Image (cartoon, rainbow, N blue to C red; front, top):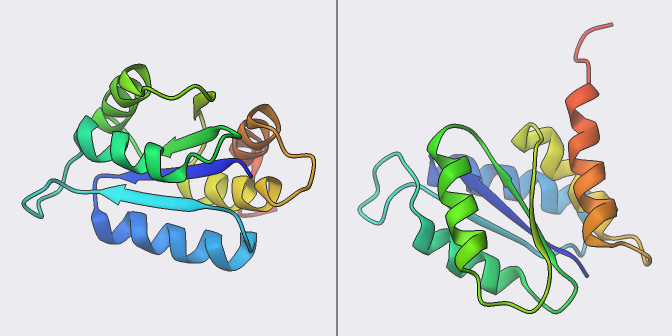
Length: 129
């Protein structure tokens, strides 16, 4: 199954998004990473790399981020990942994208590309008519 990593500047936000996505996505493997090692707001590549490794099971990983330096640190983590499977960054709103990705990852024919595309489809979600 394609793994999913949620990256936020806040550990609580990342965990909360994972909680909701897990409820919607069932069996999808979802890792959450956020905040700094000393509990402040921020991101750094090392914990993201660990989360990618934890989410990987041979079928690839899709990474979703919230904003700013999370993008840069996720790109560094992906570059440095020493995995033989595909790891991609989805350009998607993190909450809605994580929900779409979790549902897509549960499909029997899910691929990294189909999960990334499902996450990015969340860019078109309108909250009001």
